[in-house]
Image 1 (cartoon, rainbow, N blue to C red):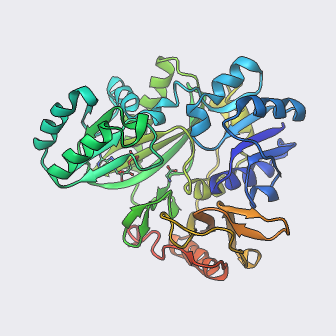
Image 2 (cartoon, protein in one colour; image 1 turned 60 degrees about the vertical axis):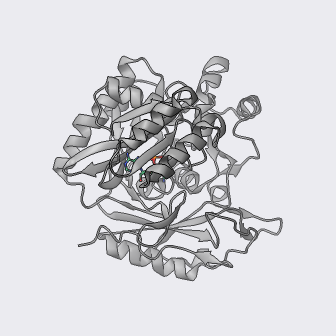
Length: 422
Ligand code: AMP
Ligand code: GLY
């Protein structure tokens, strides 16, 4: 099969690395890709939102399957476009099903319809602002405000103070995030520990991928600003067989059954953002794609070939596929540009990657310049993944190599997994 992978992050490097190893993968293209995907296939300078241009490229190169990394093309309807205009298979949901990520209100209503445990909530719009303000006054404890749409990862605000929460609601409904905050969800605060599950589904059957936990805050001890993700661990030690069984019965199976019952066209990855409260799992959010940097620990733990599983989404044989998971731990430490997630500089030479022994370096914001030197091109620069029988051994290798890899103003969290030991 000839494959086109859309995206340019560490997630896409990990997916390209895995697919390229398959004897079912003939030509592999990545659009637009990065310095890492270039080592696995051919990068092509396509805009991932320009579906006609992608179509033209696919026709020229006889692409059989498009694998979509990030959510944006999915929410914009890349699956629907190719379904209408070609017989190229797209790994990813239709625009309607991608609303599970694209609209918090849609996701909440879906969970209510299918009795999937999640925080209680109310939805507000500009005409119900006053009701929202009164509702916040009635809440004890932190107030969780969520812009309905995608707001560049900034649409969730948690505030302890009533007046601050009321001001935030007023700002959001007043257009703080443009269209994304025309509707706002206010939900119950869930106090617990988060983890993520990933499944691949054809809209009827599913296969589970390895479980993971990511570290979103910039600072050690989970302090400071939210980022795209500073590191990840797989598996997650506190998720035992009993919790896993609850997740399957209460969340994963009803979600997949809900997709099927509602006739949603979903052939792709489902990311379940979960939280354990007491002994019970709740859904914090759905994403219609793999996580980043979770993919950089999930994919290396797949011992079986991913290509037949992706192909099976389109021929009704997903349930018969075998997905073998490596029992070892995988850890990844994200190396970022100094200043990230706020302003940072780009174009810094990256050195020492090839001397990173025992790790898989997955590039994110890193590009080759005209002279073939790899330089930084984003906030998250590269994810250093390692595998070992224990979490601490895997982390030690990731950290040893993060020390060897250098670029001006490099930064990484030194405490990935801090809350999971012992
Ligand atoms: P989301 O974009 O929905 O994943 O929210 C971003 C982050 O906000 C989550 O990863 C949680 O850490 C936090 N969060 C979201 N909803 C809640 C909630 N109901 N209770 C507590 N924390 C939450
Ligand atoms: N690491 C979280 C995400 O990919 O959304």
